[in-house]
Picture 1 (cartoon, rainbow, N blue to C red):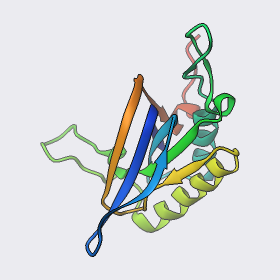
Picture 2: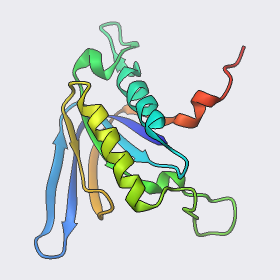
Picture 3: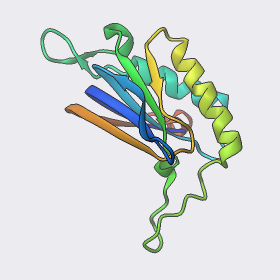
Length: 159
């Protein structure tokens, strides 16, 4: 599972609807936008890793201006958006392949589990709509953008 995390001063997501046009489904003030991509081999342990790492990542500034506070420390809002394109493979050709992304039905269940785990942290969580065309508007604060990959938990740390 991959999470592209962006610290924002404001963000919103709207879902395009053929009948009504675009409709805002989620909006946050200062916090994090978390784009989630689900790999074909991911499971609940990957979701737990991503949630724990995201909410505890110290990317908010303290009084001295250093990155020393987490989303939990600051009671940050979260806007969590599904984004299978985080598993776009671009090594060959000009069109990305998404063959490593989990198929929609099981990915929906794992994404929903991830959302539940984010909600259990006590932070305000907003989201878009899985497998829908969405428009995301955000004001990246910093800018701060961090990639978290659950496969990293299997890799040895540098000594």
